[in-house]
Image (cartoon, rainbow, N blue to C red):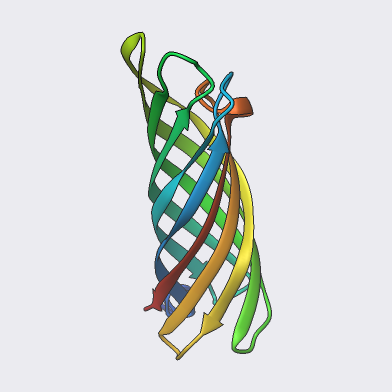
Length: 184
């Protein structure tokens, strides 16, 4: 009886493994933020890779993302010489997602909570200043998924994030991205 019970528990537990969906999304797009104490808007690009695990192909997916954000700005309000700013960021974060819809198009909302590694470089009339920072990365986002086939989909999203550093005005970063995803 113990052997039968153990066999049934193992059999039913392994069924949930077959009822999962794994997704990888590669995306890129435009990022922008205001710099702290400067009248310049930093603009640039973002590249992101996301791995998601969707248990039992439900509405909630759990993801891990790593990205690269590069922004730059020029402040020309100084009368002597313009000042160049270059900021790069590596966010690494947990990204839970809630999806709505079952057909070809799904809408989603998502969160982001993790860390960032940032580099700041300012070049201008006072010389060059550079610094590194690490801290909290958190945000919210939303978007849509367009299923092209059972295994392939397009992804479009907007993400608003907050960095715990003093380079950006209030630490806010905006990103609009598009990409392609694969299910397996």
